[in-house]
Image 1: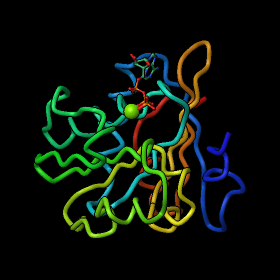
Image 2: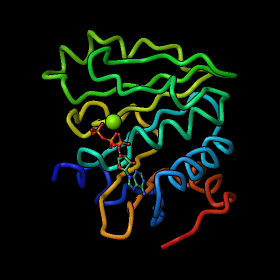
Image 3: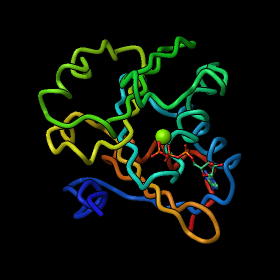
Length: 168
Ligand SMILES: Nc1ncnc2c1ncn2[C@@H]1O[C@H](COP(=O)(O)OP(=O)(O)OP(=O)(O)O)[C@@H](O)[C@H]1O
Ligand SMILES: [Mg+2]
């Protein structure tokens, strides 16, 4: 699977944590807790096979910004959704994007992210996007839940370490 390209090898100065998340509810809780310790302006890549829990994570993340769960829908056709919460959240799904040109035309590089967050599903489809992301989440389906692997630079990972997350 292409996913591994964004998570391995570990770039210099980056750190990684792994969490086993047993239920959709626990996924939303973890996402909400993570959102609460991140500074605005962060872009997050969400990789993993179909149904791995990427959109579920976005629902929890958005809840931390007072966005209701049902406002978060898979932007498969709209390509980028904007949810107006206490801060704006941009939610992109690149599953159907076929080329770098098409990606550029979505406007993903023009978003005013200073006060908000960008969460991108299927970032691994575009190598050019990796430099634009601050935090990489890889979701994988296990028989007892979802394994979530989080990679980012030391500063961001130190923030995440302040969150009480059940480690694997
Ligand atoms: N531990 C878990 N964490 C998250 N989702 C889970 C978990 N266990 C089961 N699920 C289920 O797996 C599905 C995840 O769907 P979701 O839409 O979040 O995946 P996705 O990665 O966004 O898929 P897609 O690539 O199609 O957009 C949901 O039906 C959810 O209820
Ligand atoms: Mg999804």
